[in-house]
Image 1: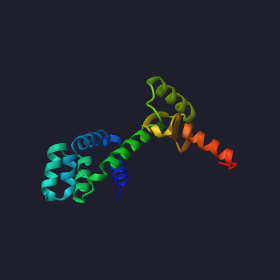
Image 2: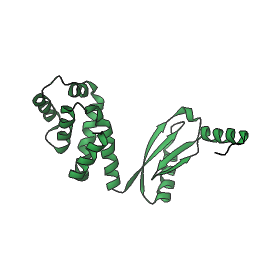
Image 3: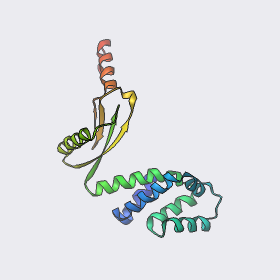
Image 4: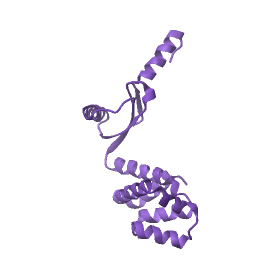
Length: 169
């Protein structure tokens, strides 16, 4: 089972009511990798693992998913689970996540302008997930709502190279 499958199952049961709890557990696991490793390594009995999770996160559907993942030694899937919970929650709330790659960090005004342009184009509220990749050399690429725009300098150079070779992109 994948982290996304766990998230879909939880979301089907609880809707977006558990999304904040999933994000909080995700933040804790990210900041405490030894705790995550302890849950995944199998050194504890199922009862000890359950008690440890309950002490840390209380009783909830999300902690029940974490317990199940720990029993199967799949806590390493938690980040995928949390990302999918966030995506499903955003989708439920009419928010579209746009994957943005850029060579340098965007200024707040450029981020706002990009959000505005994407909201106008898609008709949906936009949340940007920005990744800085210096190897792009310059420009920006965006994946949103199944549409991909590539305005990176690397892509433009590749197109120029293909044109000079007489190839069609």
